[in-house]
Length: 90
Image (cartoon, rainbow, N blue to C red):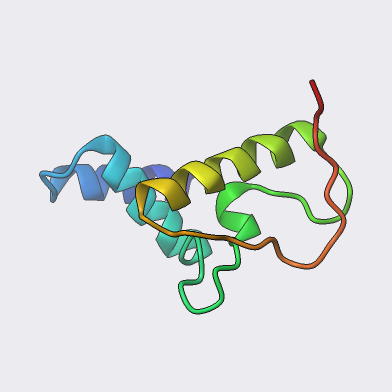
């Protein structure tokens, strides 16, 4: 956690980017690209998506964030990694 804070501080001091852009750059450094543009597979670690059938709340939030990210970056379709996904229903 301390390392993450230090990385964010360094980006803030050396960048004129918005906080959102800085957080995204840090997350990419830690977890890799959000969506693989060759396969369109979502990076579960980046979005905190659980593929082992646990944590429905985080998985649902992560999938929704991945969909929003894809939409914002003009990615037409995305796929989940192979696994078992537990999501929250209405």
